Image 1 (cartoon, rainbow, N blue to C red):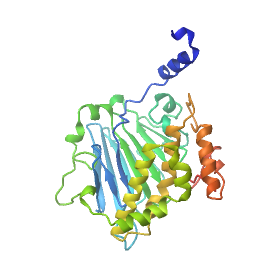
Image 2: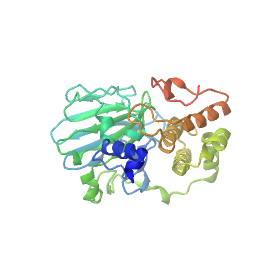
Image 3: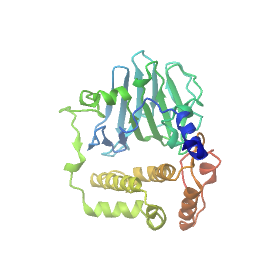
Image 4: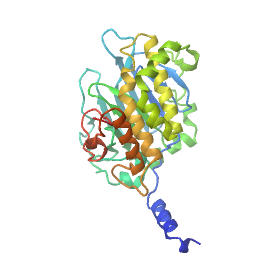
Length: 333
């Protein structure tokens, strides 16, 4: 049966030659500025506290995050630091807590993040093999939306983790952590008392988001700011269910920010909105057999062109095609 269908043979070969990382892509923990957090059990909560707190902890890897006030008079807190420390003492540190952009520091000062990996390939071992191994225990790459992807390369690969950093010049807009297979299989999130696990400190409490009453007026205003006519008429009709869910979460986060009087309406969400649209387009309309570079299909480019023309702009070819995006990621210019 397969011998008579060469396309199935090609597909089988591609799957066999693209082994997945031993990192659990089904579990995700995130910290988005204010910060709004979602742990591995998909529980959303607010964490308005400054300082350095554990995000993730296993026998092999410990990850800390630092939060600072987003501005001098703000009640909101922003991600400003991420530290990944291994049981060997090796580490990676990104520290923006002093209001200036920080380069990536390691125990050996030799991590190169210039290799491009598409979002669809972040869990592909084949894609990560293209990233130079300058450090014995870490690799770093950049996504087409200028996010940093840092993964561990431990001898026991089933204990590796992947961290995504959505960075602006002086703050870290969002942190995402994907745990090791061993962490997931052993249900370590039940024993891990970090923010991504079963955090339960009474002296520095978290507040579950579903227990907060959000003002409808704030949600309406946030939707007006984030979801304009072009999003409604071009992007949302593309039937990307996960995109609709992520946009709803951005609108909710925006309303929560507004309810405590933090910053301008949608300030933190606008920075993430276009990256979110791009990620969902690559997920839903990716090129077949994509192994490197950007994986956007012609159908995805068609949606982006319509979206940009609707805004009376043009697609940002520097970011979307030339893969030379610098500064803030934008879909249209």
